[in-house]
Image (cartoon, rainbow, N blue to C red):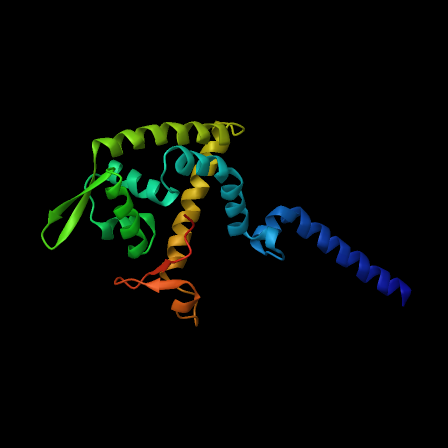
Length: 203
């Protein structure tokens, strides 16, 4: 009886060791999260929040705009004249938040509105372009420092993985989990295209 139990224990340990060899703890945790620290979204958010303070100081302290306003300004500078609805799509924000951000940027003279039929297009002013150039230079320098420990191969891998994750995230966003309809009171809103927008996007 003891020999049989010992054999079973040995077999179980062998299976566990083989599983660990195929799926090391870090890989297994990401694929099958058992605790908060295993969740990919938590880890990505932790990176963002860890390095976010210097950017908050830059945008809010020195430039006087929030990160959300910076995202809106950057898109308008890069894409040209945009309708607020298009900005909302590109920023992955709900339209009321975009409207408030656009309003504040217009008040500061960084953006201007131009009538276009029944709606309006938003353009960057000279002041807006100047602030964008300054902010982009500062943010770019910080970005370089953040990835300084990665070599060229790791950078290429990171870029490919981020693109792959973004594509998968888009698929999951547009196709809610089976049997779980969108719950508006739970933080999601449905736009006119039937997709779900998060209402908890950080500033």
